[in-house]
Length: 351
Image (cartoon, rainbow, N blue to C red):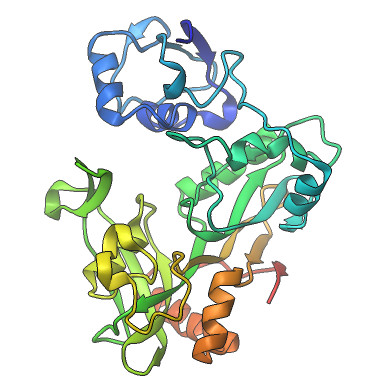
């Protein structure tokens, strides 16, 4: 059981909802548990009662009550618990860097690596960030997240100023994110906008995200069909316009085309009958485009197919170059919907 913590809000964290900040700091504390702590006045901001939707500001102090050891992802010194890495592990992690400058690190996150700690999760990227200092006095900071089983581009800020700028870019939707997915099934339309509200729901198998009508949070995804394989599998390029938890996985399942390997939302339908494909989630954060925090020029970073997806692409005879053509078509479609992505002037990619 940890003691009471008094945590000062950093500049890079300002503007967030209190519940989102708390989820980042203590990811194993459920929303229901947090609401209970708030109702009882055990979580306070500057000594006053607060609500989950309150926006926090730099310099404010959040009182966090004693939490069981398995409910805190950070130590009592308010720093992520660092994991000791061998020289080989450090080299392997650094080999995943797609782009690096004084402000930003773009990492090619492997599938299966959690970004932050969770229940029973002892190995996670948040605990490895000291290996990515590259001589800097500051520890890199996470500025967005990917699911544990999703591979691809993940951004880190190398300073507090960089974190503020990148967080602002995500909040203002000045960022374009592109994903590749292999799905079981073929959409009726070759392109479209999935507009489906989502909400979190707790059940016997834990927390999941479900379609929720107007009672949920707005969630929109643009998709484009790249290619079909024997009429039963499809390669999709996806562009989320919102950033809800598990949004792409739920949207694809709602489209009748669950992502291959996504048993959580696709059940048995997520595993094609052909059986010769890896059973890992076939979802890649392929590309991210956003204003560079240092000078405002546009940074574009592209990740390669992870090993399990590269294996599937080879087995199915899919050509990576077709994904680029589909992205151009999808971008034009997005612009027609008044969602104009920025043009790139800096670029880092691996094929």
